[in-house]
Length: 471
Image (cartoon, rainbow, N blue to C red; front, side, top):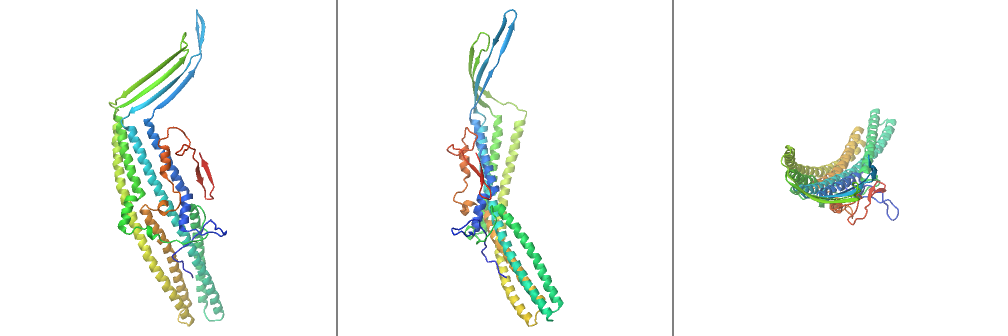
């Protein structure tokens, strides 16, 4: 029975220049997940929608302009005097400009920008989740393929043993019990092999869902030692300061603070100016037209609002205090995740050493038991037990190798550094600020635009590389 070496492999849909299928590494799987995973693409779209809250808030600084027009027909019948008819019409333009609103617009803009930054941290978290899912899916396929190979080889070995035992029974060298034991072990091995194949199908389906294409061939994967924190102290420090959950909670606390100021601004005076121009045609009998222009400044001083605004201020303060506590909780959870990931990685390393020693010892023991069985010092059951112990230790080694890689990337994720940028997965990394700067000062337009005002094409890719565009 062959062992799975420390490096593992997996498949790719690409081809080499010579036409042969190109093996894809774990790095290639991560790059594919970064490009094609719909969960990550959906969160990017959600962040772009969140960006639009900033120009919405900034609209409070800008004037509002409206226009109206009307036309009608009026007939007047006078006795005496006869009937008169006229067709009054006209149009009107109104403009309103806020001059001071108790700093509500300023705080609304600040809150919107804080929420945008929290959204970027959420996108960062989603990216880490997707990449860790890709690592896990990759290693699950590798593990299950290796287990199926081991189980399949075990079935072949037990089949040969059963045939040899049957022949020895026919020759009168062994008893019917030995044949039954061999047959039972083979039946159990076939059952476990079927279960392993079912698990492999499940892992392959999960891989395709996360990465975007099915696995085919296997390439090498190693523990990313250079990207791991040097010590538990470093891991805790990085998690406390760089974990997306911590960063997001900090910006949400900032947004909650601005929300308190925004509501409190409703208790302050507000100043606005309004202008209008009105032009009427045939407004009355004997008049051909009339024009009216006016500019009005308004000062509004809230004196008492029934306590509703003050209640919302108190409510916002409580929510702000809650968010402060959530920041502390996020930091505690980030440190806990880093410690747990560090411990799991070290446990996997220790387990790997033990499994390697166990496999080596079981292989030697099996060789010895087989030789002793030939000279009558061991029974067939002893041989079957030794083969099963070797197989179990090999399966355990395969699972431990999978856990080692997954736990290593889980540790990187806990520190907030499992990102496409940190891993250099793509030449063009998604820039969350690009769309933000495109829209933050936008005054007009309802189509998606880039920074130069050109219509932008948003491509939605599927697992076959095809996409639809939304303009």
